[in-house]
Amino acid sequence: MIRVLVTDDEPLIRAGIRMILSSAKDIEVVAEAGNGREAVEVARTRHIDVALLDIQMPVMDGLTALAELGRVAPRVQVLILTTFGERQNVLRALSGGSAGFVLKDSAPAELLRAVRAAAAGEAYLSPGATRHVVDSLASGGMAQRGERARRRLEKLTDREREVLALLGEGLSNADAGRRIHMSEATVKTYVSRILAKLECENRVQAALLARDAGLGA
Image (cartoon, rainbow, N blue to C red; front, side):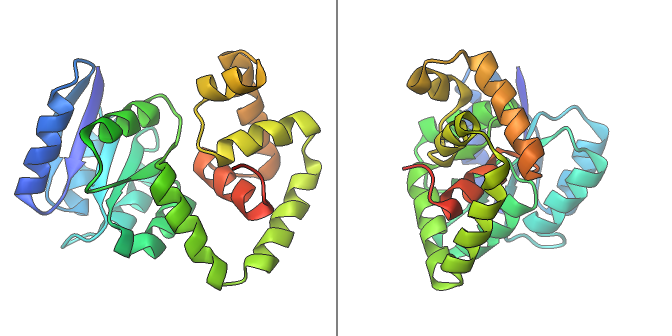
């Protein structure tokens, strides 16, 4: 079972998320929290696989809680709950080690996919939301970022660049393997090697780097 912590300061939203997640046989909502401080305390004392964090919360916001969770419960995978209007905060969350983000108006099936991907150690990049976020960077030094990203990618082999491009499209290990006729285990090995070479904390950071460098769809 995937053990999930749902964190949002609005009880109705927490109830709706719990209802969606509880419909899956492999997911169990084991705790809820109304702010980031409560979420950190729960994760510190209980077995949590995936934590869903709202960004805007009283007492302690989601971004601060993300940093705290990285310190006290690094094994917990964090998914950020957000809206399009908070895209700059999403970028900060991704660079801070979040496993991805889910829009609050996402379809139930997308929320389930996100939780399962995070639990499996695979970042979840909602295609539409990711494009929206990445495109928002265009107004601020895109050329400079692209050049820096391309320089960082010079240390990769051609095959590693190919795998990184698929990460930039948001593909899972299994989907990437099918695309380039490679086993899922081999893709996972390549991903680990890529993260080490690029000094990225997770797949999300690598995917954004790939986008900056012009790789991926």
